[in-house]
Image 1 (cartoon, rainbow, N blue to C red):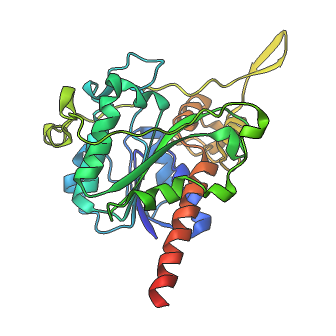
Image 2 (cartoon, rainbow, N blue to C red; image 1 turned 45 degrees about the horizontal axis):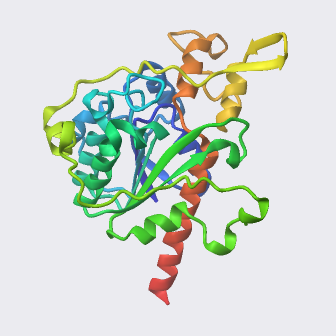
Length: 308
């Protein structure tokens, strides 16, 4: 399967999906350090740059659109400007790509704060935009610590399918009843990480019209987000900062993945500050692998049923 990765960062998606045999047809990234990393790691994959310029890309056909648009304006740790902030409005550029290229699958990632941003209307407008493009969707909050990496990192993942069937998207994100654990026996109440966004809500409030944002052409943005906390408590009196190598492992990257040649200097002299930021803004690789594997499995089943 082929995919276009937007807001690519250092390409956790490609690291996760290479073992699955998925092939990138293009990236979209503007930050200097991630751009240089992509150039060195994936020299044969075009970086289309600014996501707001998607109408000029002529990227051709691909099976999956994947990416996590900037999260700063949705984070509970920020000012929560939502889609009124140009960074938050880039979710509508993502929808513009969906409308233009009509991939079979779409995968979108963001922080849990997006669920409550602007009283829920920002997220509702995104889902309504997917429906307007003819996509059935499902969403779920995943925590990276349950996928084999030693960090608590909760993120919202939206999966959509072009057949306008929510069941296909839901089958990617949710396990069958027979595979779920029995939470009731533990005596604890399970907090459901998912929710339902009803149809019919007015998603044109406060900049919710994605066509408006697409035509407005939000300016090219520089991501100023700081990474998640990288302090490690060794004992009660000693705290040290995690090394870039340890941070790579927290996200599931190969060792020294972000240690690249930079500004004419050898990889061994690559600035830690740039590595920290790039890793912190990336995705947890085991989650992306899990989602990709389930999509691949569904596509294989569909192919088998076609020939039988």
